[in-house]
Image (cartoon, rainbow, N blue to C red; front, side):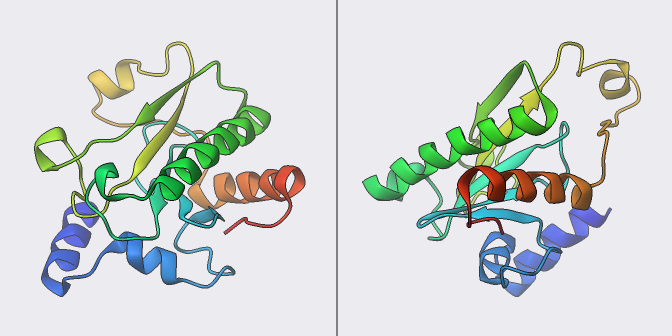
Length: 162
C-alpha cells in the first residue's frame, strides 16, 4: 500500500521522486542516494528484487534514453561499470541484470523519468518465496546496503558517494 500511495501522491503533486532525491543534500541518507556523477546519480531501489538492486538516474528529467546527451549516456555506462565493481566487491554476485523499462507499456513504474536498473543475481535467487509467497528476500536493510556501497565507492573512487 505504501508503494501505491507514494505513486498516487507523486502524481497529484506533479512531482518526481527521482528529481526530489537528486535535489537532496549529499548527507541525506533517507533518499538512498549512494553516488553522484556529473550527469547521473545512483540510488537503491526502495522495492528491490535482490540485495543491492540499484538504479542509475539522469539528473535531467527525461522519459527515455533518446533524450539524453551523448555525454550523459557515456556517464550512465561508466557509472554502471563502477556500480557493478562495487557490488562485486561487497556482495560477490556471479551475475547481473542491467537495463531499463522505457514507458508504462514496457513496465516502467515511473515512466516520466528514465532510470537504468542494476540488479545483482545469484544462482537460485528467484526461489519459491517469489513464485509462491509473492515476496522478495533481501539479506540486509536499505540503509545497511547503502552504507556498504558508499564506503566501498569512497574507497575505490574517492568522492562521489551520495
